[in-house]
Image (cartoon, rainbow, N blue to C red; front, side, top):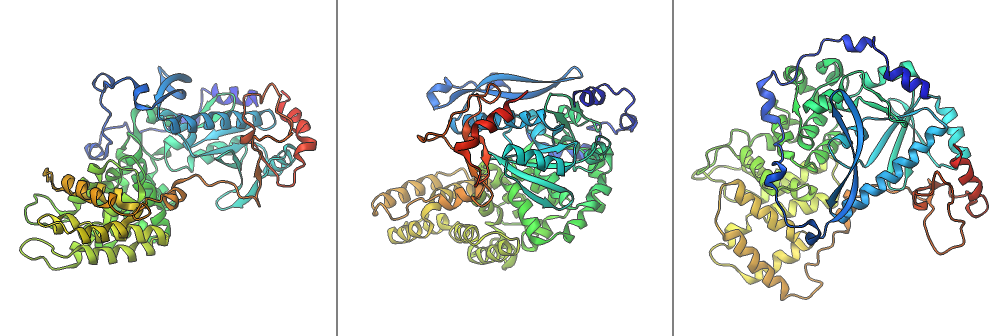
Length: 524
């Protein structure tokens, strides 16, 4: 495998390198979709991070500099939950690297991309340069429980702790074709477990230049092969500090109508991912520019060009401004913000305004989200927020305690989201008044006078939406640390790897054979 690494890394006559690439940044349209850069460090002077509950941890990141790519570790202050996820990912990927003792494998795609952009991946894609039949035999010997799947490629899926791993198989020659078929160059990078990079489509250069483009600049062909890539482009523009390359933008007028061929639940799945990014309004603006919002919701599309009294721009612009003002990655809140004014396109305008648009908007949202495949719990919570989002205007003059109690009972766990929706809607409209803040204080005071169980904020269902799926018992069980007499792991190779990261077969005789397993995996 090392010989292959060096052969790939040292190839001087790579046929892909001769492909003419259009230089980045030449299309002025790209700038309008670019995510805003963060303020320089010197302008972000904070108090000592330890005072805000943050902890120190090591961050492992990839750096592309001076034509070289290397991994470095640095110490940073982060929230405890982020530190935990970073440590879990490091342990899990170290464990995956031990598989390189048995298999020629490459990390590929989002795992490498996320390291450059300082994000924590929820899953890992790997490619084996040996047939899956051989991989399965090795996995069986190691006691790794996996499941087999087949869509575009036959694949094996397994878990290392809470990290999902997806493995496909190809040959050394097939690796180039596999990378060429990927959606964007920033996802078409492979890295061996020994650290060697294989980057035939210049993904590392595009990451450094912060450019989003398709491999070999074949955007229209790529979007025709899989039109969901257009929605993924919107997601990446929202989630990473990149701008679309001119070749991608040139393909959009001809490619945009292809989104209409997608199944509604696939559109809903991609919409959910867009709304959980750091800056969802960037991707939504990209989709609306090329008339793709109509495939998400025709009533939402009617907000484009719809004017309202007292506002300089249309209702769609207000929707995007509200999403931007919220600064949220919360799915429920962002869905409510996206659809909160959808009813305005379905009712008659009265004196330049849209009185009573909340209820029809709530009903339209229910139908749209059901069509897009969202679950009943999400639909109910989002539509309820939209039905009540004009509460501020209704209560501004004369707050009614009974109505507020009713609101608290209706919203329960979404009361905080209601406040955030109310404030973002107000900011999006350019309203800098203190009315929203005063009403929030009053509602909270009323809520505090109610029994403790009234309006209790139960986040269980929302956590289920966001959490990384865990392996079920029928597929395997996690060997967890406990007070039982199970032998501890002493292997030099695996000594730093928590036992809870190992996925074992449910019927694997752990107590009797774990030492043999450890010796087997620990061999160099």
